[in-house]
Length: 568
Ligand code: PEP
Ligand code: MG
Image (cartoon, rainbow, N blue to C red; front, side):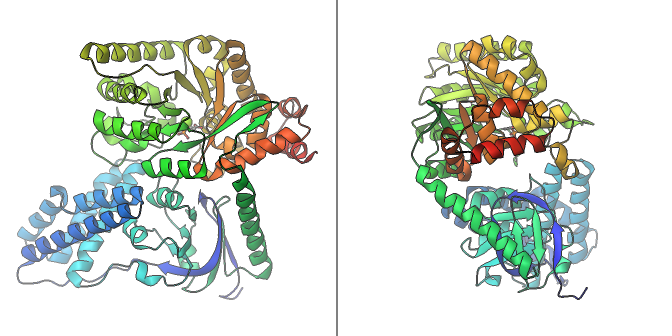
């Protein structure tokens, strides 16, 4: 194998899309910081400049509509002046350390504190500290931080990690995609890539050492496939994937603003959102409301829960953006979405621990504040409330009672509000299996196939090596969905699906054929899903759902559904 031969790397899919182009490698090299006569004052000046630089990057990111990048940069600008960092450096300087030593010691110590808490959120915070201190070093050394200057033509960005500041500086028009060695589904790069609509693969081990600036590189953000210096055949394969993805998007465009139905019943295709910019994008693509507003994103990356007013403004903004319902899900913290200030205690198995609705008993005030904000927003628009990770009828009835109590409190205070329809996520198998008992206590079901699959198959959804067990189209998962749909029908309540399976062409088809009446997906998939429902309406799908439910494997289900979609 020569240095120029093709290298294939398999990473974690982080943001869908296919990109092919020259690589730009960002490798954050360390810079040397020399000592000076008055290191404390040089440090103070550098901190001040870095803080202002980060704040100005934050402002430009927000002006460009990149709210998530803005939030990360703002957090970093606060971190630059945080006493935890500043005092540690000054203490080390006072004890006789050089400026370089003081920075290194502080970085190591703070990272060690974060690393001792074993969770992905803290790993991201440790990365933020590294980025901020690196920026301070560069300022002291008079070296520019890497950024957009590096990219003049459309390129694929390759890095060990792409920093929040890098992404704010980059011109999204010129970034075809990201490939990084670090990062997972909760990493900043994944969040930012999705918000920019740029293809991304993270966790691509060894990519930085395999590629040089200008080398051609291809990535598929839906599969995690990366090809460095693709040979002619591979490049053709990626071009074909890119063309297929583009053709699919273009074909789906004709469904913008058009309703679709199956067997004469309207099927609503709404959006999953987590931020204001997601809401704006959902409006742009013509989503029919919001089927899942993941409120926990408002609770992450901060040191305390958001206020009632902040939450009210966000939820009512979302509601005012649509004429259809906006389903606000109460915070689903825990599992891979921890918020340290709400953590009860360290858990061996956080996905099987105090997660979602189970957490509310541990932080009743935070839950009540959120419920107040949702009830107030429901007074301004078409809002519905949804509870995540419930497992028993008792949990549902108890939470409902607490919501009613909060509503009574608002009534007593004379605060404008409304009690909205209240539904639950069906994402724990026990709820699907007892759906008939749960249904009388709720106004709707929404199936979360991501967790339902993880819990039905006993396969951690964040463990990439268990990919083959994480197919939501496995007949075991479909049986749980079917049971939920049947209970919904018997009790006259709507059943939607808001997990990733709804955005899978075959998933959308089989779930619709089974009787689901609403699908909620990321904004970019809304019109593709409508096109699938439309083609299902015109295909012969009469026996498909029954055949799929009787299949033995996920592969068999996929064959059955694929054949039905292609059958005129
Ligand atoms: C799900 O579990 O399918 C779901 C939609 O919720 P989340 O992905 O936020 O856990
Ligand atoms: Mg879930």
